[in-house]
Image (cartoon, rainbow, N blue to C red):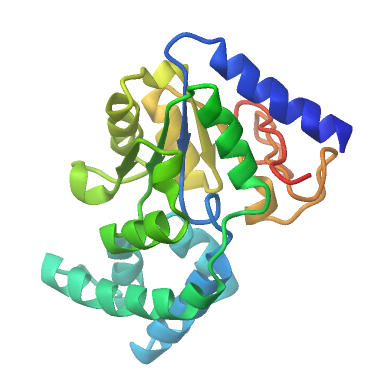
Length: 242
């Protein structure tokens, strides 16, 4: 408990004292723990299209990916922009319908955001999700209280793992990517953050549910290729829950 509180405070205070610093957040799996709902709706929607997704498919082909990427995998062919928009809105409408009644921010997140905001640390949201899902989460979580910018793939040329979203997000809060700390939970997102030149921490509690020395609900890093960690994450981001 005390270690977690110390780490949270240290991250916020150190960022506050760093010139051109900002917090940039991924959304799904980071702002809210909604991956189970994305999983269930993709399983159902893919099955309706004749594709039985596996657990490995969900991890490697769904989490962190755009709807275009997922749909082309499910259908086994390239999709037109119109096809992607049609299927994406049907699937995401189903997701919002299922998740809406259960919506809540990640445990401990709001207190963390409030403390960072009170110190004047600029924050932006950058997601591969559709604009409709971004607006849904923004409104449900009343994120305007803490964030000054929100970025979706429609605003950039390339989604994650390209750096465009995080480059746009940093510019939107008048900060440099090199001074930004990114909160991510997928390999796709970590690749995007690193390509943008930002520091990045891996939110392990949402992606793998492994025990961390800092607590069960924790953002954990280790740098390197150890299979027990996420390659590419650069440092520990402290757990957000008490």
